[in-house]
Structure formats: structure tokens, C-alpha cells
Image (cartoon, rainbow, N blue to C red; front, side, top):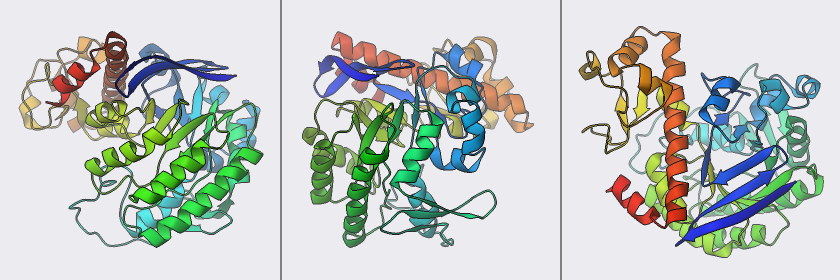
Amino acid sequence: MFSFKILKKEGKARTGVISTTHGKIETPYLIPVATLGSVRALDSDDLHALGAQCSLANTYHLYLRPGEEVLKKFNGVRGFMHFDKPLFSDSGGFQAFSLGFGMEHNINKLGSIFPEGRRVLPTKKKMAKVTGKGVKFQSVYDGTWHFMDAKKSMQIQSVLGSDVIMAFDECTSPLSDKAYTSKALERTHRWAKDSLKYHDKKQALYGIVQGGWFRDLRVESAAFINNLGFKGIAIGGSLGKSKKDMHQILEWVIPLLDDRPRHLLGIGEIDDIFECVSRGIDTFDCVSVTRNARRGSVYISPRNGGRFKNKFRINIKSARFKGDTKPIDPGCSCMVCKNYSRAYLRHLYTVNELSYFRLASYHNVYFMLHLLDSIRKSIKEGTFKQMKKKWLM
């Protein structure tokens, strides 16, 4: 069972409901990422308490550990992690980039995904090799080599038991030239057809638009993927060398897509959410929410957090918070902000107390889920533009 209903639009921004066998997802929505069957530092009871509508699992990592045989015993990731809500999974195609040119070019999906003005670092030996048939990956755990093509990706995602799965694709580097990006796009389109052929028909398959920072390739890919029988459309790969490039790419692609749900892969910072929702994106996934927390970066709202260099985050390890009695965000009603001070969170971080990671991650996930809830309400009320202006001004 899978359906998508648009409830209200304000400009290109829209709110709707994705219905799956395991529940509904109100959009726009930022999906908490459970790479290894767990959202980092949180358990499934935390996700339920947070009101998480769904989660996203990683095909490559779960294929390696714990492996398909273990997951089969639990009827997939949902049973394994004791989470009864809808589940998304990626295809493994991102690792073609992160373990391939991502290592060679020293670029990852977070922070330096937009490499404008980046510092050049020494290159690393690639752990992924792309061919016309698929991708040969090296395990980050034991160094063994594995092969994945569209058929294998669909097989693994069937074992994962995800409600929404992604077609196998090649995520390209923002430093790849047009000739290489064009060849990668040919592979992605061929693998898209293979994914449609081999996927578990009980799962909703999304096609992925690729093409890097090249307008003609993005337009070609959007038209190609939109004309195939996917349940939804994802936009992935290199999104240019700056956030302005990403906005431009969405403005090329979105008008070519119909009303199926649209997912933006690997993007989830606060300014990105507002800019991309305003351009018609329905769902997002990004590990930055909990990764920021683990690194001491916790979210604040610009109207309640105070005056800081980054109006959306504070660096909790800063000495200025040593005796700060205020909660992380005075306007937040999560259990962390209700019960603990900035001084306490800073103390936990500086002494490397494990409870810090749970509390900071809990706050960040709560903050983002409630921000998206407010965005949905603003679209329904026709006030999204005002909300965006207030947050991004």
C-alpha cells in the first residue's frame, strides 16, 4: 500500500500525506536517519517519544552488518530495531561516491558537499570502483570486497523490509567533469530500469534524478525518471559547488516532475529546509541532525536562542556556557530543555559523559521535527513565506 495526497499549496511549497502499510507521513518531513538500524545515540523508544513518523536505513551498512541472514530472522530492520513506523532505505549508490571519488576528492555529503572555497586535502585510496554493471565496494569493517548492482540492491532492500526504497544509482562528485557525469547518468538510467524490473512490488520504489551541475543532464534525467513507473522521485548526486547551485538545480528539475512525492537526498540544514520546501520538496534525509549534536552543535531558534555567530546553532563546548543557567533553546519544550541547562550540557560534553550524546541528539531531533511541523502548519494557513522570511532574515 502506498499513496500520496497533496492537501495544500502555497506557491511551490506544499503539504501532504504519504500513506504506507505501516503508517502515514505528513509532509514536508525530515526523516531521522538510522544508518545502522538506530538513530545515533537514541533508541526506538526515544523515536516514539519524539513522535518520529518514520526513519531511514542504510542498505550498504546493514548488508555488511548484521547481514541479510540476521535481518531475515527479524522480518527486516523494523523488527530488528523494534520500530513500528514506516521505513525508508537508500540504495547503496551513495557509497559509490563516498567510498570512491568522495575519498579521492576529499569531499563528503556534509559540510563540504558544496566545495566552493574548500581547502585542498591529500587524496585517499578509493574503496569503491564503478563499472557499467555495478559497483565493487570494499567493506569499511573488514576490508573485504563486495559487488552490488541494481538487482542486488533491490534484493537487500527487500530483506530490509522498507516501505519506501531507492533505485540503484551513481552519486557523482561535484568535481567530476561533464564527460564523466554524462557516463554516470547513462548508468543511473540503465540501473533505474533494472531497479523497476527487480524490486519487491510490495515496496514503493523511488527513481533518482542525477546529472550533477549540468543543466542539460539534469533536465534529461528529470524527464527520463519522471516518465518511468516510480512511486516517487528523489533528487540526488552532486548539487553543485554552493547552496545557490543547489537552488538552481531544483529550479531546473522541479517543473519537470509531476505530483508524485519528491525526496531530496542527504540535505537537512535549517536554511536548506526552508529554501527547498519553497521549491517543492516534500521529504528530506540527513545525518547532520545527530552528527551536529555529537560534535557539540545544538539547535536554537533565532528568536529564542540569543545572539550568536550561527543563528541556528550554538557550540555547547564554548566556555561562555560554563555557568549558563538557560536551557539550550528557551523556546523549546523538549524534555532536555525542560530539565537541563546549557551549563550542564557543556559539563557533560567536556568530561565526555555518554549521556551528553543522547540528550543533545534528543534535543536536535525534537527541534527539527517540531520545526517541520510548524512549516506544515504555515503552508496550511498560507503563512509559509512569512515564516521563511522570519527565520532566514
